[in-house]
Amino acid sequence: MNDWLSLRDPVRSIAAQAGEAIMRVYAEDFDIMHKSDDSPVTEADLSAHRVIKAGLQALTPHLPVLTEEGGLPDWSVRQQWSDYWLVDPLDGTREFVKRNGEFSVNIALIHQHQPVLGVVYAPATGAEFAGVQGVGSWRFTAQGAQPLKVRPLPNPTITLALSRSHGSRREQALIDALTERAGEPQVIRCGSALKTCLVAEGLADLYPRFGPTSEWDTAASQCVLEAAGGQLVDLNGQRLTYNRRAVVLNPSFLAYGERLPLPLAQLARISAD
Image 1: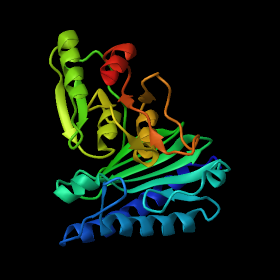
Image 2: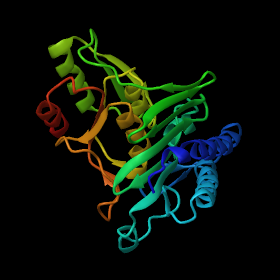
Image 3: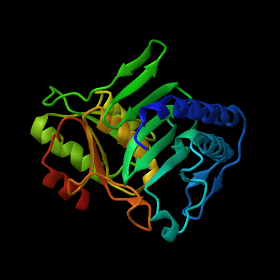
């Protein structure tokens, strides 16, 4: 399969339907459950999972669908997949519980371990992004599809996109290092894959994640970022890839625009401290 652009708008429609299911729960009182790793899950996660899985199976019946809420097939099965859908039905459940609007639906198509189509939709705000490898990246507004492009460095002020729920001493060390090199950075804090999308649309220069995430957290927004001219790499400078191991945990990573504002080795030392 290589006609990925033709899937963009049908997948956007599926994400919008999942967003409607999420917002129905958001508007009411809801129960909060917890998984074995103590991360929260709500009926919104589960409802969005059902909508997306049904929609993708109807769209591409021959492709497997791996979602955060659908259980992890055995590695002996997954390692046979060359193409599959990788989905986080509700990325940023902690932000959903806080009702701050900073959560998203993430849907990615993986081909040969790479995200080749990604859709990120934030139903509470209407922010919507898509990227197609080799074609382009867009933010969708009432005026239509607006092409995305990362911004060049150097800038007068470096802008960091940081997690709202996962602050750390490493983040402060990074802020200190940037301040010493280029002046105090501007910091934007928000939830979910929207941080990577901030880099893709040129509103931030770097989103560092010094902690664990899963593959469904990053694939869709990585495609949006890369199609806008940015990079998402581990602390060895290697691009994140998918479905190469039995576990689905990502290493620490850096999402950035035209180039890194600090040397990679320095960022790796900050992460290790």
